[in-house]
Image (cartoon, rainbow, N blue to C red; front, side):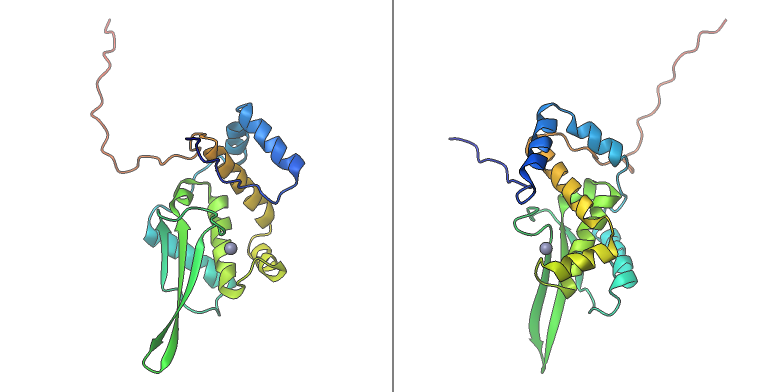
Length: 191
Ligand SMILES: [Zn+2]
């Protein structure tokens, strides 16, 4: 059985650009380029931290959009099925009122990424609170929140292509709370 080809995260970008990325992957040079450009991982590791992070950005740019009922990392979410994350607007009738429930879910792969990529995905999902489609108005709003939005989305897709080609994760989690093994004393030669 032939393995399924990995999703093409760069579909829609100019062919010369995707060929370049492909070449960098084959030459094993992409990881270096990405980690030089984005040396640090962000520290948003939990759903609570993600919620606070999203609320802060929302408060800055979209204060008048309705409350978010849920913000979470989602391990079942496959990045870019068609979206980069998901945003749902569940409408429920509560009593006589139609209540709209807004949720933002971010694929778990974003937990181990540089701050720039996290910001990009959150900006993307927040923009969907106002604009449903990926149209001009949508991307304008994204750019309003993050002027580098387009470059970041491209770089993120480049990283996802690296992962899809079985590249190693470039921003693996740093062990924070694990107790350190007792240090073995290195004997200093005494004179
Ligand atoms: Zn979208």
